[in-house]
Image (tube, rainbow, N blue to C red; front, side):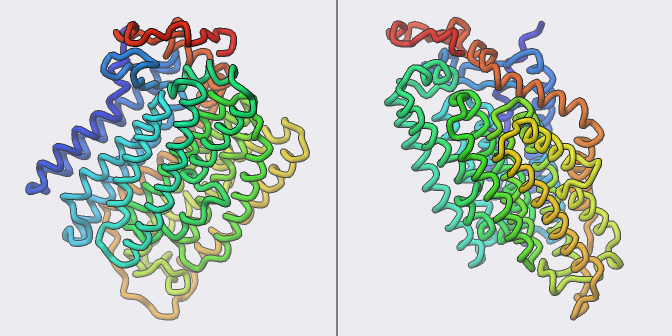
Length: 523
């Protein structure tokens, strides 16, 4: 079989190279979109290829040909390949949407010369976080995301955006400091930050120390993922940014945190000592988030609160510590990335046509723009979990896994999930009625509905529908991904074939072979 491991670094290398090229072309704004779209299209192709190839086993690349665990390695398995495929499709659609918005606004609302390299750096950070087989490199991916996010969230330099960007950066920096402390503690306790080697060494250290390390990592990732009560920053940060930026933030950034929780909890701490805590956090995240959404009168803030709420579903699946729970959680992450991003793009169109995102000012949009009404309705019902859409399939999987667990806490989470789903439907129907059916108090001057922005939005909604029509094969794929997470051995052996070092040329770089336990039975 042809070695396709060279595909693994492309989701990181291509956007970074394109970012440098677009920065060099800042005086030629007509060329920047060509470079950006080409780069992200190639990343999507590479990600889809990886999605197929890694179904036969993980692919590993030792960066600089330095063997793990001495060097940094990038690992593509079923979970990371699926996340890469969905995220690259989302980033490409959002980029096309933003380009159409810039053309429609005569490029006055966005400094294109800054936007392109920053957006590409963001895409590279997402890819790096998904592929990294090293805790510190995951931290680097988060910092890349932080730097790019601050630039994007403050585009335009308005007072509200600067304020939101400041809140976002302060919270993100606190999370990063906590993550860095956790990495230092992990290294002090185990002598490594390589994920595969940690899977071997962590079971051999004191259980109390291992629990402290788990708590530190979980806290750092919970801030990134906006898990209650560490989610208060999100509703105030996202709605002020431009529509494409808000969309990509809502779709991807919190999911990088969720991915990190899945990876570390399943690979490093499979004993599940914090599962009950995670289940209580999942319940609180679902209920508090959706109650916040019901109380909102601005559609952007409403969607921001539903974003927080539905993170709870993913944490619920993770906390079940079963293949069924992980299968449903992974499927739900893929579903939520596409649907939540699409809804924020639709809201950008709503604001353009109706002149506002306030539900008290909007009204009558179904008559003004019937296509827009359809574009909102489909992903809204998908998010609410109406059968047979992908949101329903993901929630059904979570409910079945919760019932199979059979514990009182699991049954409580099942009830909370159903209530949250019903309240989500109520909040979205309320938004639909006010924005599209009610008669507005003041008839706004209707804006245009640019087809260049409608196209990427419709494409992303179609991706969400594909997750429905291909629900069987996709759910089977996520089940195989969950099985790999449960076994752990395929991941560890792909990175450390002999239980000690990877296959790079740095096998003699250190002399501590005897210090590294083989741990074959533990992996």
